[in-house]
Length: 434
Image (cartoon, rainbow, N blue to C red):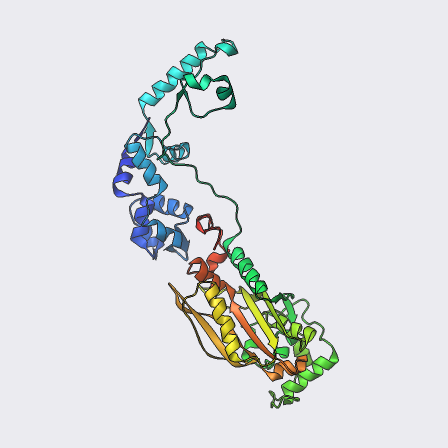
C-alpha cells in the first residue's frame, strides 16, 4: 500500500506547482518574475516537459495545451486522490509519484512482499505439479477453460475506475492530413494537379506575370536570389520577345506596358519561388486555350518577419480555371466554396491590386482568436499576361491561398508555427479525422 508524503498532501490540497504556475502566468510572464515564485524550478520543469509552457526570449508563455489544462484535472492529480482514498493506481503513475517523492510505500506493503518471498523459498524445490496455485486469477486462459479448473478458482475483482494505459496510435501529421484532404476535394471537383520546381528564373516568377522589372516586390527584401548558380536559361525566343514587347509597349494587348527597356539579363536571374503563380504561367504555355482546371499545393519562399501568421517558408494553394465567358462572380463562388469546405463560417472580400490580375480581390476569414486574417489573393489574369503565353480566347480565373492560415482555422490554433511543431501533446490530442 502507498501513502501520500507531506509534499503529496500539500499538492493534493493546493494543486500541483505546474498547475498553479499556469494560472499565475496565463498568458505569459517574464522568466525573471516567474523564477521568483515558490517552487518555480519544479513548476517550470514539469510544465515544459508536459508541453504546457515554452520559454522564448526570457519570457514564459502558456501554450494552447497548457491553457486547456488549466480547467482540467490531470492524471497525476487523479492518482494522488486515489492514493489518498486507499485505491490502487496504475504502475506507471506509482513510479512517477515515487520519483517526485509524493508517495511512499507503507510498512504493510513491505511485510506482504516479505511473506510472498518466504512462501516462494519454501516451495522452490517442489515439483511442477505440486507448485502453489494462486487463489485469485485475473483472466481466463484456454487451459483453465478446457480443464474446468476455472470453476474452483476465485476471480480477481476488476476496478472500472482504475486508470487505463493511454494509447497513442500512429497517424498522419495533422497539417499533412489537412493538405491531403484539400487535394482530394479539389481533384473531386475536376482539378488537375500542377507540379514545378522551387527554383525558377525571374522570367517565370515575375516577367511572364507582367510584374515590372523595377517592381518593389523584386527587391532583396521580398525575393530570395540564388548565389550559385546565379542565372538560368530563358525559354524560346518567340515567347521571350512577346513578353519583352508587352512590358515595353503593350504589344497587341491595347496596353501601354510599363515602358523602359526590358532586360533579358535581369530575367535570367534564378530565385527561390516566391509564389506558385510561376507554375501557373508554365501551365498556360503548355496547355494553351483549352478549357481546364488546375491546382498546386506547394512550398514558397519569402524573407518575411516570422510571427504568429508569417513564415519565410510557407505553403500556397494555387488554382486556375481556363474557359470562355468566365467572370469575377465565378471566381468569388470558388473562393466561397473553399472557405466553407474548411469550416470558415465568415468569409469576406475586398478589392485588391496585383500586377497580373484585373479585377483583383483579397479574401479574409474570421479566426476565433486572431480576428480577420487574409488567406485569399485572387483575380482574373490580365491580357498583358495571357496574350504572350498563347491564351487568345479564354479568360483565366486565378487564386493563391495561404494554406497554412486556412489550416490554423481548421485545426483551432493561433500560431502558424504550431503546424510544424514536434509538441507531442498537441500532436496526440489532434483528432485522427479533421
